[in-house]
Amino acid sequence: MSSQDEQFQAAAPEPAASSAEDGMTWWYRWLCRIAGVLGGLSCAFAGLWNCVTINPLNIAAGVWMMLNAFVLFLCEAPFCCQFIEFANAVSAKADKLRPWQKAAFYCGMAVFPVVLSLTLTTLFGNAIAFATGVLYGLSALGKKGDAISYARIHQQQKQMDEEKLTGTLEGQPL
Image (cartoon, rainbow, N blue to C red; front, side, top):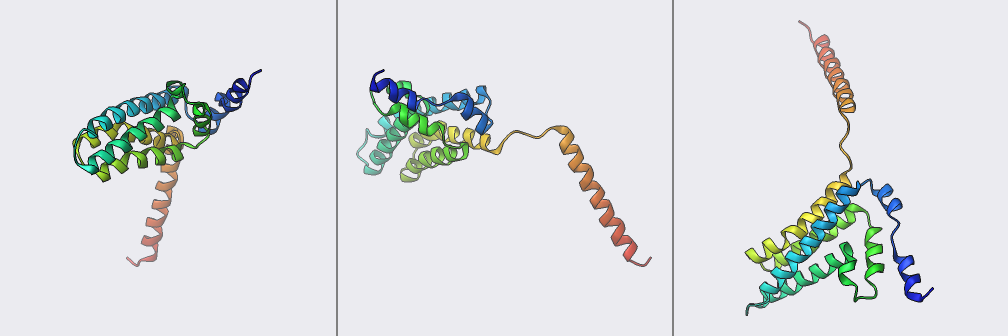
């Protein structure tokens, strides 16, 4: 076995272990990945367009957006970066992050160019990358509870409210 094969096997994530840990369904995981790839594309094109100017802040924001695109491709779609040797290792480490960590990283990464240069190009270019962070943030919140649990909690709260109400009425003279 060659050293590249060993690196690939060491860097390859275990899909069963990662999906069991974060509680994401397969279709939501693919939705997040597709949003990451689309966010990378929008950041790349908008960043390139943003660099075609003489304003230095726009150029800095455009360069940052292209860096965002590279990071999104590297983390979400390492097959797009086959020419980079460490792409699979970075992707494996990114897969081990918790969803809230990815959410904070992607949202923070997308907000910085907008703060640097507030233009329509930076807003629309980073919107999908920010949405990717929001999707990961929503997955970090967990699944919605079932109706039976909510009904039980509502019934207990209603009983407590009635007990408080009758307790205050009994304590007051009529």
